[in-house]
Length: 346
Image (spheres, rainbow, N blue to C red):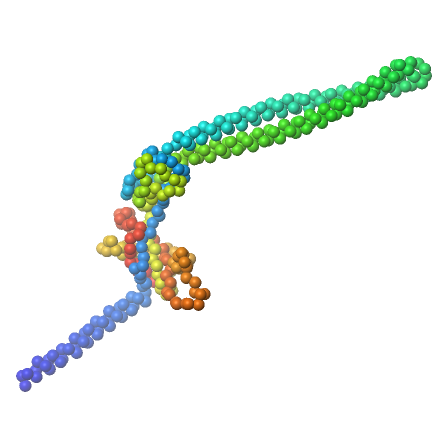
């Protein structure tokens, strides 16, 4: 009888333990289910920020370098200077070309003034010739009547006729001179227009040369921290070569890639709990800012094409931008690229 008592007690304890385990599991399962009905989470997320690359727009040797890795810079700071002697010479050459073009305009304008004077002279000569023709015609008519009345000799009549014909010939010559002066005036006006266009071209060349000269000084486009420095003093750099990058310290956000099956209840403005892997003890709050216009796969180098016939359904992920609501002390320790875990309260 004594040997059976411990067995009976043991048999009674085991069901109780099982019931407790089942109740606890059910409780946590229900809690998990209720939580899942109102929350969506993912660890496929990371911090993002604005990164501004610094690239030279002209080629040259680096003569001054005022940056180092992880150095803070302010917008407008002079970071790099390139050898500008070639560009200064180019500015001088284009300046001289502009001055020559402007001097040529002055010469052409002076020629135009003389042409205008010649035109006015030719016009006056034509008017004088016309007056002479009128007078010669009047004399010819009078002498013709006098000759008919035998009041004058044939010699005087012939002289009047000769004067009339000579005056008419002078009118034709004056007309031709006036036409020539008019054509010369038009040509001079075209020369002025052409000379002025050359001035405009030389001015554009000068402006471009000055612009190229200004590119030899690289200034900080934004305030931030210098990263990925890839330039040394005395190095020859090409236009468009990446020298370093500036990570803006003004804003950091989260890009979380949620499955398309998680998006049903998500809306802009919903509260988000953010946990940064590097700072597990710091709880950060944010909110849903916007949804990507396409899935992440659509922006890949080789986007999927399901029309090929070999279709395998794969759940796609949609990037969601999450803005962070935190004080400056926390924002200062966050770095783009850090992994995070986000939970959206739907």
